[in-house]
Image 1 (cartoon, rainbow, N blue to C red):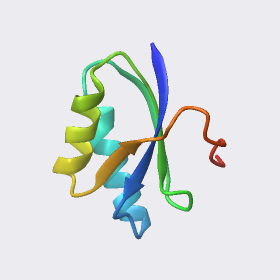
Image 2: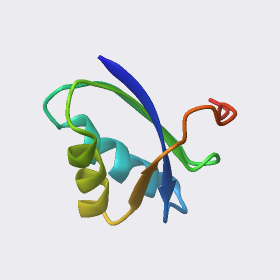
Image 3: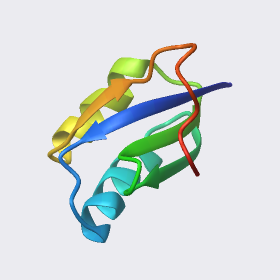
Length: 76
């Protein structure tokens, strides 16, 4: 399983956070997903293609961009 952090664009409220989390949680291969509204980020533990995660977030109306390796960690 991989653990990745994504930056999420377009979230402005708790409902947005819920939409993103719900869209990703139902994907096959997702073990854990947590969305942080304040940090505009999503932490995902998965065994599925990155493109599927990004597409699920896009279908929910937002944009997911993988956080670059080596960048400082985001707050939980």
